[in-house]
Image (cartoon, rainbow, N blue to C red):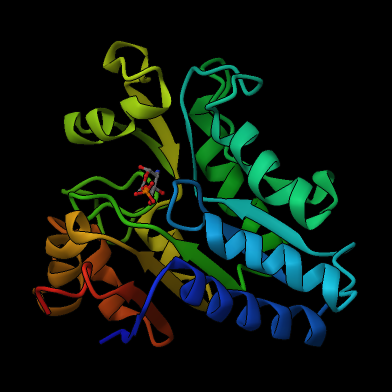
Length: 243
Ligand code: GLP
């Protein structure tokens, strides 16, 4: 069962994340961070950036691996996860961009990209702390319901609900949202030494209930957190309202 921490708001959650990550980096300057996109981790990154600056933490050797990327979207597109991670994590924290990786969604080379990504994570010594958001359908990364709990990084089709949810980033137009993605698998995510899942708002309450109190099932990919020995779910009262 994941540890559940109920907080007042995203800021309080962000402080908890920032403290945990700062401690890791102080103990090991080569810490490997698992990074996520979406709105849920934004306050956490901001708190971490502030801490890094206030406490003069050396992040020059910190490495990062993002969870996922749209397939067939130019990495320079403002909504690509490559651009998003640069904007929300690499630049504010002052990380070395060469040490931060995002799965390769280029359709010409995507066939081997998943295996290569998992090999790169292993070669780096594995992820120390993976931050996660959660989709309203219980997805983590882009592992939609039905994803194998043992999966590695691979190409996936995006669920209709996820494309509807993410249309807000593409001028509200679902037709602009890519149909496929490359995502770390649930098996890949479970290999991280610590998992921290953040969720806020009533629209996440059902997914959080399934994640924490439902049976472990591919129909709620986040329920795989129940299999992890060091998983923490940090949520506000609205997201916790069905627990
Ligand atoms: C996308 C990302 C997920 C993220 C989810 C929820 O689908 N691939 O990693 O958790 O959105 O996003 P938000 O935090 O904005 O609700």
